[in-house]
Length: 95
Image (tube, rainbow, N blue to C red):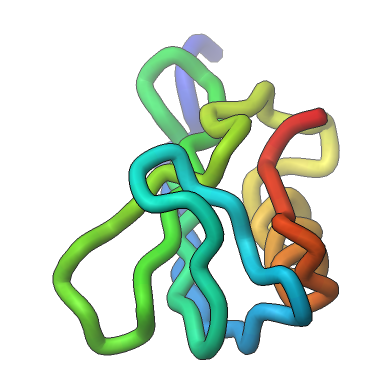
């Protein structure tokens, strides 16, 4: 089978409180406070990660995104990213 499995979710979206030092974005630098995180499977097989201030309209690319999809899958990656942002420290998607 080629391409993503249509039975699997292609996007996960959750809210998280950024830890001290927040999350680093490409567009505006560090964002802090209550954030909404979206992890989306892209057509190229990588995962795109974006954040926004919860309730806002603008989305920002989490620095280091897109990232290769890990063998554990998109949902596991999403939960890992939520944990990173929750710890703060200028969290980024990649190394």
